[in-house]
Image 1 (tube, rainbow, N blue to C red):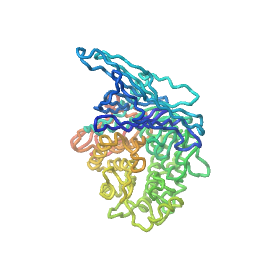
Image 2: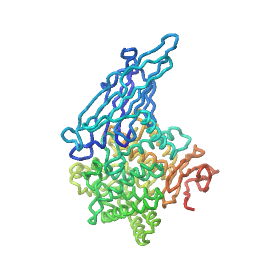
Image 3: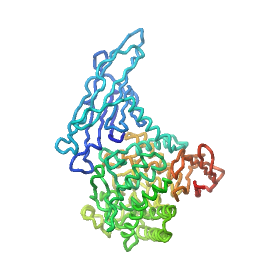
Image 4: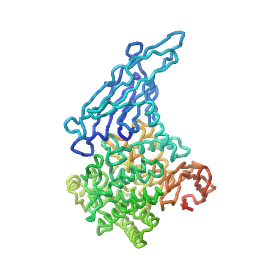
Length: 630
């Protein structure tokens, strides 16, 4: 759970005797240390040994039993305790509530209280940017309370950070809980998924919370934070360029839109006339950057994300603001196109954890999609037709090259190779780590799904068969590479979106339902994860944005074609009579998109304030063209 100045990872469990096991990992992203780098923030754990003791009639309670744990942006543990971050302060608030349930005829009154629970940790003593700092836990209302039958009492514990020279924060727990609850409800009220499947609807709602709450207010403005205990007050061109921004306009949360726009503004400051690459990550509140893997295809990521974000925003002024970055990144990619017509890069977003050669499938597909988005965006911005024609010709060329260069039979499937192992990367780190691949056969990779999300379905059947074969599919989704146990959710989420787009609705639904139940209702809950074993399945925020995009772009098939227009190729499962997205805030409107069966056709309706403003009937598998300006 995250606020603008704090994040907390709550690891919880229930012991065999019903007792609570709890670890609160508190992260304070804007309390920085030197030297500035990705993880130069302060953090600490508050574990069972710092738990306050519960006193009943002066005696420590040793038989507390947890009966339920509820999560909805606020964690509620029953015997009643609530844990949540402040929306705007570096504080985590815990509310303990006790009620005297005794019968008046048996016990007249009970005394309750909390004892202990204090912890203080100094940080940044010698290297604090503005330190030293103090991270602490404290009980605000120490003392005992006498309860008659039916009466309740509340105690407040605060985990917070401050400069050592400053006083402790003043906390109004009731106001903080109201602010957090209202924020969460604001996410849930917008962009509601309405399908016959409760698990899908619920995980979609949870994904909205995770991806949109995780925004830090830094010295350089709002920054969408990956999270996971490691990545805060910083931006990455994949998470905060490619993954999250295309989704934010659909939700219509102003803070999310501002964070996306701010990320592109910061990246744009690195544009240059020599076309040296923009760094992969801007870290430490914008003070410095990380470029350790070289060009990961970052410019393709930024062009892809910024153009889709601008189109979906429906805001011409914002679109004009993003255009120079899109234009520059496309030119950079064009200059990286090799003699085979594909885009060279030093690595991909996995940063040489796995080989990607000198040119990889992912980067070229993102470049292709970005070119198409730029054509739509440039048209609405009145850019010269000659420039848009150049983008169109380049897109045609890149698409052909994707087939010619990457299209191959791999392990018996007529799908794609991810890279040409005979052409090694120019990156020394990649050469050292993956030189042995040159002597091995091509292996299936999870990212063979990327052509689908770019609208390329030339090798659809074999690619889908490969994705869901035992070679790649595992109990936790797609293996990054055939024969390995490593998985990254981002590729699974791309694949599920892409298989819907490819028209294999029933197969996509089956795997989506399986994945959603495992993530929402399994042991490591309740969000999409980053990876395993790296990060131990951290709940990174942008992966939740990718989960939401399975529906907006996959199941509902929304493809922005202008600031006020889109195409819709819905994939309504056979067993569903209808589905809808309520309160879409993209394209400058607040509207519903409803899809239902009309005999052997589909009825696509656009509604505003409950009134049908557009109704189109299309073939099952067909595409509706929606122009909200007319």
